[in-house]
Image 1 (cartoon, helix red, strand yellow):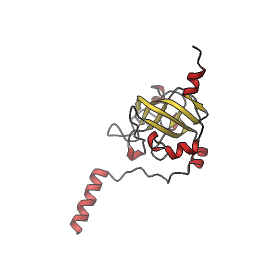
Image 2 (cartoon, rainbow, N blue to C red):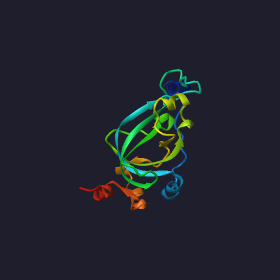
Image 3 (cartoon, one colour):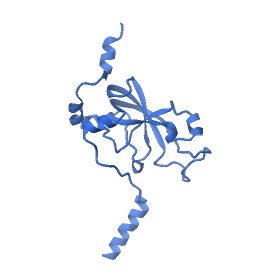
Image 4 (cartoon, rainbow, N blue to C red):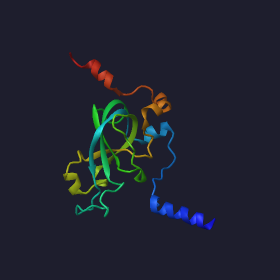
Length: 176
């Protein structure tokens, strides 16, 4: 029995490295909507960029190279907006890996996305910001948010009701 427990602990230390994303329980939708800076639905177009975390001198924070805490940006074609940015396309940023609470977006899939506006300097050094992170404010999404695949968000969509911006409305208003 002791040997089995020791083997299990060893496996967890080697493969799990003892680090995992820890989230608070999800807020009820009404509270999450009030707390989040943006709520939108859209389809993932492409991976837009990967950014290693840097210290003030521009050196990589992780000695091993890439880290699950590095930022990755995903281009999203926006379909509807309930709160926040109204644009055809946005770039949302999340951590690279699930252990750092990064949301596992998949290209071509549609999502209901909830998140916060965050100063890019909270994540990146001045050096990294000069390399191309667009804007001083980024759209931050995490595994701990209510973000989910659109097909699994029917309860949230029913409560959200009518969006304040819709891609279809924009098409209907465009001149021919």
